[in-house]
Image (cartoon, rainbow, N blue to C red; front, side, top):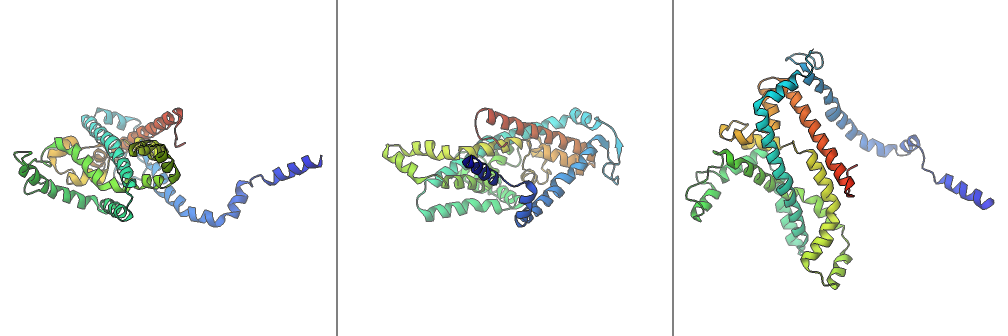
Length: 322
């Protein structure tokens, strides 16, 4: 009887304290997270109030939320606009390219980098691969325009002198090349930066697993596939789910800089995406309610895709976000 009573006392003493006692005991740690919470509230949640403008006819000078209500009128205009489907097509093509080729490239790069066993070489390659991330898209676009220029551009000079093409390729004068340029510039700029999380995950792999694989006679490719890739698989799935949730979000800065703020009419057919579409109507034509409706539809679709990708991963028994 005494023993059972003692166990009951011990179990009760091991119970976690309530929420408020924990907050009181960890007040210094809570203060560290407070600035982040405030920033999220100000820049992520408070702006949601402006979404009601998508159901109104907002006019410049009106206080947000006090304009005339028009119901679903803006959404009807949106679905009837023929240029919307061009923007959706371009957005999906560019996003799918980045979600497949662009998503896989950092993983492959991280695996190859992990196989370099000379620390000095490895650090040098890492540093060089990170540098483009810190270059603004304005500078990046200028570099690409010079590099791919028809007049003495390094890439076109190489193609002509190597007799691969007879004449320079007008990359910025023909819309059919834009999707490839968007993919190439995104990979070049973000390859090293996006590989950091995979390299960090690989650093946690136990070295004894590779030693055991060597004893079993595993080849280098087998060790990469069955040990390295398997170890970072949860990270890959989580990042892929998040990427699916943002499939309608193209890199606005990238598109605007490569097209000279959409001033290059020769690229508009394949460069006009949902983000530039919203920008053009919202700030270019001051149709704020219409642009807000387009942004709301995009956000709802992205959220639905995120939930769908997370559910598929959960059903498949993989690591889901929630």
